[in-house]
Amino acid sequence: MTQDAQQFASDNYAGICPEAWAAMGEANMGSARAYGDDVWTARAADAFRSLFASDCEVFFVFNGTAANSLSLAAICQSYHSVICSSAAHVETDECGAPEFFSNGLKLLAAQSADGKLTPEAIRALATARTDIHYPKPQAVTITQPTETGLVYTIDEIKAIAATCREFGLSLHMDGARFANACASLGCTPADITWKAGVDVLCFGGTKNGMAVGEAILFFNKALATDFDYRCKQAGQLASKMRFLAAPWVGVVESGAWLRNAAHGNACARRLAEGIAGLPGVEPIFPVEANALFLKAPEPVLDGLRAAGWRFYTFIGGGARFMFAWDTDLARVDQLIADIRAAAVA
Ligand SMILES: *Cc1c(COP(=O)(O)O)cnc(C)c1O
Image 1 (tube, rainbow, N blue to C red):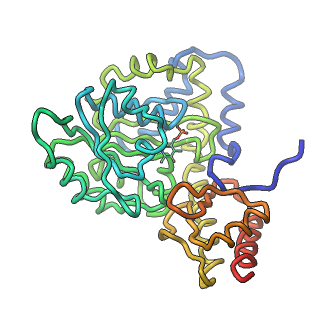
Image 2 (image 1 turned 30 degrees about the vertical axis):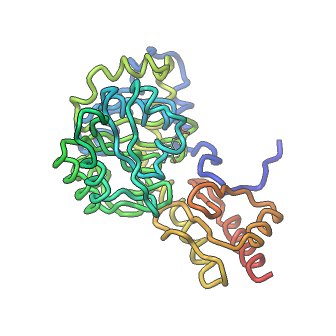
């Protein structure tokens, strides 16, 4: 079968990285116990505990929507609310799943120009209403890196966590691209999670080089009570769990999780450097992870479409390009050349 030329419309266009694939192959040799009672699942959970230097509770689900929704539902009662950015995936791209799985929580979205949530915005929403008629704020969720490709610094997360503590809110992190944030900051996973005050992390595997799967890490273990039942009820307990767990063993134990992310980030930077100084064309947001949102006149975008490039324009208001573990540098250079040609045409 012939392959289409590589596209950068999403980082989930990528295939499965060799480390995840090899672990899947190994897990496929013979039989194993079902529903997570197998050695691969135990080993993957231990790999996370050692990576995070934390005795956290670890669960594996199929995708990010389930990871976010179920973990927020674990934190909240149906009459609670969750403060998020207006750009948050939970708000814009999960079809109401957080509300559905919690039987009614309300997302309180803070308008954000760049996608980030700030202590000030959290404070404003947490104090706007304190009467019985309004859903009670119970949690804050931040996306690291943001949907706009920005990375919260350690200090920014600590400041958000301090505000959460002030108002008795749990701090949830959507880490669909968590590895890219670690690679960008050059910090340990612990530095931007439990050490900074994060209670629950959804660690994305799909965009990191796996076929499927996200891990949910509860640093605040009290929040994980009965979470296994919640996953099962939601259809997220894999009976052949070893195949959700094994790829994590492959990427975490080998360090591929970080190498994969660093490659995606480097490709975004390469694109940013390659288009620097072009007339009318620039990144909308600073390039801090594996995304570049291109601001360009419509004829330039049309030129790129005509050259065969696929990209989304519904997020962030420009043309989004996203890079993954498998990004071919020659294709990035081709994109740079095509943007240059379109910009000066
Ligand atoms: C991709 C993504 C998710 C997960 O989406 P699924 O399609 O449900 O796996 C969650 N949050 C963010 C910010 C994402 O980009």
